[in-house]
Length: 201
Image 1 (cartoon, one colour):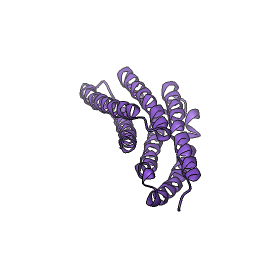
Image 2: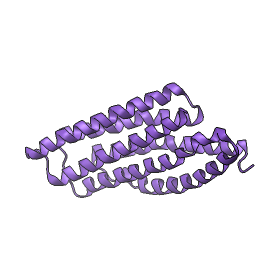
Image 3: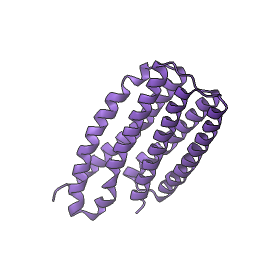
Image 4: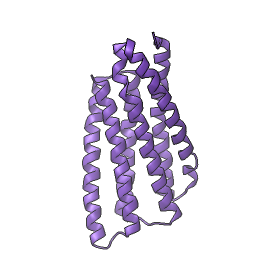
């Protein structure tokens, strides 16, 4: 057998911890964004790279175990989606860092929208970590519904932002950063939904 039950349990526990760490990561991003301070971002890139490497290793273990144990199959897509979540978090970190370094000002509306969406991500990443250890169908449904809400809000915010840009309320420099942030946020929510879908089977 290519993977013992204990080994798989340890892998799932590690995936749970890595997913849980995304909440702390977003809290750092929120702090950096709100206070225009690059200090909270210093550890972000290193963490994203570290978890990226670890997630790839865990994916190989799960794939091998799934060959012999059909119960492990639903977990095969999880590390890959988690890796994409971390890549989008890294992208968010870079964008917020650019905003701070270049002293780019957001409108009050864009600031409030960004903070709101980042908080919505925190609210679905915790349950996502939980379903890795306990495949709760109700949490899976909550995550899928929450993704739909985040996707809808981010799309609406993008439309409103384009209107603000046309009216000259926002600067072009701020626009590219803000739209990039919305794209990364939608990417995180989408991959979170994919984890929930995989584990609801």
